[in-house]
Image (cartoon, rainbow over all chains, first blue to last red):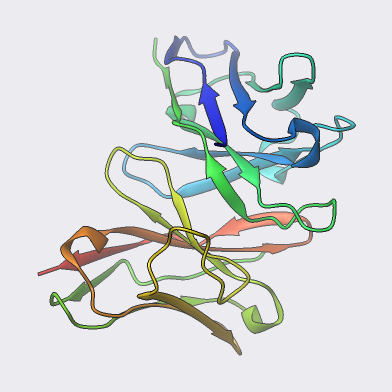
Length: 123
Length: 106
């Protein structure tokens, strides 16, 4: 069965960076795009960007341009999301989500989600 | 940037039909999908491509999308359906979520 297992909770100081991992299993890793979505406490879902695990190409939400980097390691079937220059407003649960996949491309619909990683930014 | 608008809350009695709307400019020209999120859990896709249900999603969940409004309908609502529901579409290679609707079953 498809599984996305994320790294554990992080506590960071303002100005620092955080790198969250998402290890995939149960399907062909390079055949499905992966999204990153975050959710601040008590708030809604916010899309951060998408990575193609096959070639590594990325597309980021304008809000995060210049602060987010998504990468992948095909040997370990893992995608990463690194967010820099952290501020208190970045405190949130960060999710990876697999794209449902359409004709080798992205459907922009997330059919499997990781368990979430809580990132707390506090001085 | 593209925006999707949902009502903050909807209430329904057990066994009745719940309808949650999602509004956006010419949303009917795009595909809409819906996620269910229960407290402390990750979201679950319940409707994709406007009307399709992933395997394992009960038949009581259905969707429609026309004009400027997509609608998630839950027929014969059960207590277990109480959750937050988010609509989602994409525009200019960007995923957009609605603000979410809290469904209360009382």
